Image (cartoon, rainbow, N blue to C red; front, side):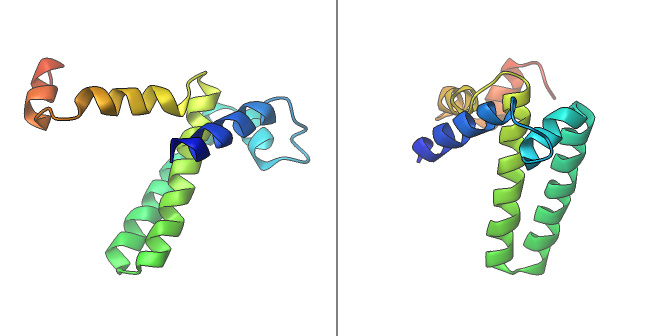
Length: 106
């Protein structure tokens, strides 16, 4: 499954040098971080609404949009999906309560 994430990350990296007139992702990069963050907020809200509505197909669609835009953010920040997957692997098997305490969070 991480293969699709790697391929998508490669494509998103390539879009950094694409013409914003011909690429949605290049347009997001050109508009900057605030636009990318706004889009993630919009997609998160749409995901919540889809979950509340109980339509599983719509939830999958909106979650795909949220993940996609999150990957755009990672690429914008010079990160890859593997960075997040490695963090999830680090947390695997840890109690969420213990993991948060180790970070000094309440």
